[in-house]
Length: 196
Image 1 (cartoon, rainbow, N blue to C red):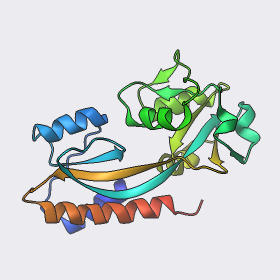
Image 2 (image 1 turned 90 degrees about the vertical axis):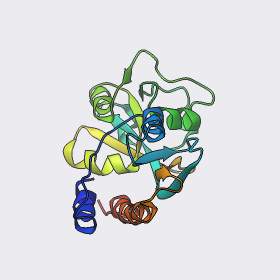
Image 3 (image 1 turned 90 degrees about the horizontal axis):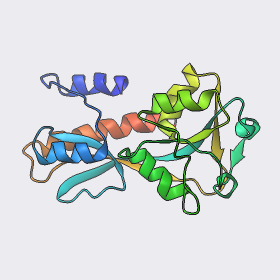
Image 4 (image 1 turned 45 degrees about the horizontal axis):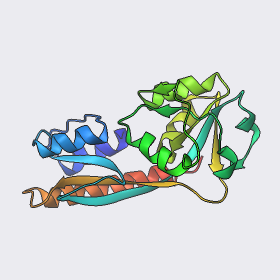
């Protein structure tokens, strides 16, 4: 996001950008009530009568601590994680919903442990034999700052999620939102395809 903000400042020098992280349902309420003009939303989500432009498609990876048996693996399959202890974000987070839809068709996550943010989630798994699902963009940041976590790709089916920019249909600033979506798409592409 910092790199993107500098690009936005160059393209929109008069714009005042206010960033606010909200769970998906609250983001949609904020759009409905005109509290925000535009939002970033992880799909799938019912976007109703809103314009929606996909800016990225990212895969999910497994993150686990160095003491986890998977820490020595290079890849896993969805079948291989069946029945395993995976710690999730709490209800109302889209990442939890995405993870549940992909990985928990036959079992439920560890319910006695859940986190309110990705940062807390990663701290929880870092020092115990537990794991979680994480979007690829989060991995780029965490690999640099966290040496006790291991990130493992799926070797067959790669669970994916889409990230979209969303705004009200017929908005006066539709051209601006399309330009913003192009900037964000380029920034996401750089992050997702950056060499480690």
